Amino acid sequence: MQGVSSIFKDESKLDMSYVPRDLPNREKQLKKLKNHFSGTLSQGISRHVLLYGDIGTGKTVTAKRFCQMISADAKKSGKEIKWARVNCMDHLSPNTILSAVFEELNIRIPERGFSDEEMLDNLRRYLKSRSAHLILILDDVDAHFKKYGCRFIYSLTRFNESFKLKGYEGLSLILISHDNLLERFNPATISSFGHTKIEFSRYTCKELIEIIKQRVNLAFYSGKVNDESIKLIADIASVWGDARFAIELLWKAGKIAEENEDPEVTPEHVRAAKADTYSVITESKLKYLGKHEKLVLLAIARKLRKTGKAYLRTGEAFDVYNVVCEEFGESPRKERQFLDYLKRLHGYGFIDLKISGAGERGRSHLISLPDIPARVIEEKLREMC
Image 1 (cartoon, rainbow, N blue to C red):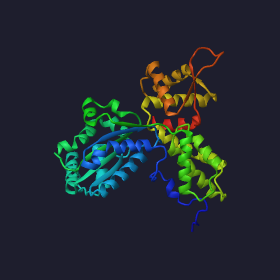
Image 2 (cartoon, helix red, strand yellow):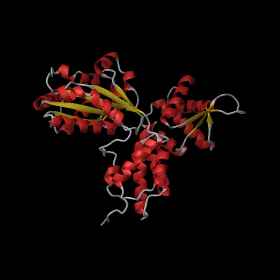
Image 3 (cartoon, one colour):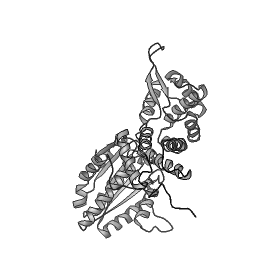
């Protein structure tokens, strides 16, 4: 029988589904959401907003915490605001998205299933019967948009009008995206959706320390994670500005200390956790890249692994990219587009770029992988491409 942990006080506080009562360094975004949905709370007015930013910047947890808050505020006023979150990576089509919403709301679906139109009509009936307003969070909506475009999103923004809802009941949207998806919407959807967006920038090292300290206090017994370990976790995760990575490292370091029966989490445990966590974290980030961004990164990783060098010139990378495109049956993009891909990969934190220094031929960029082994990236990208 497993004994009581001497390290963890409450391990569930490190689960990615956990929503803290307070969100360090996301108070500003919460305030914007509260202001934007004030009419929803008071009168049931439908509002829509896009939250966008890199992975691990707090978009999902902020949306969930906001929905918890507005739902509780509505209840105090004798009103009902329901909310549901659907991850579009897992539920891609309109029908599977609506099925997931029905499951969240405990609405029964007959064995024969429903068409999209029937599901929307049943959702209308459900909300009308309860005089309830639904805030629907579509997480990783980029995945749905890439395959289905704007049509379903547009229909959701017109939900109240389509079903002639005039009371408190209705539907509002919170879209969560890796980038500013509004720029790719068609004019009709932009007009219906509005231009409201909230950006989530990467966390700084200082901000990550605050987040890690909060989770340490919630999840560990006092004195079990020293300050050096907290600082090291923040330093590692600040390459990405990624709070998810930081929390994953904290949990893994704690598990390693626990397995070794060590009295506290030390920097050595953090380093071991980092080595053990790379593969999972890398894969979760790579899936957001476009096809040619993946091919460019694969070319860079492959060349750096084979040469054993720390840096690669852009010209060399472009040559290998052309070879990789041929291997995967893709037409290579022009050099200008290739350079745009490099800038994006740099922005995402996958590569470092620096201008070649004095005494080096030309003014090309030098490319390196900041902290992730080339072998790990190459293996993952071969599976994905």
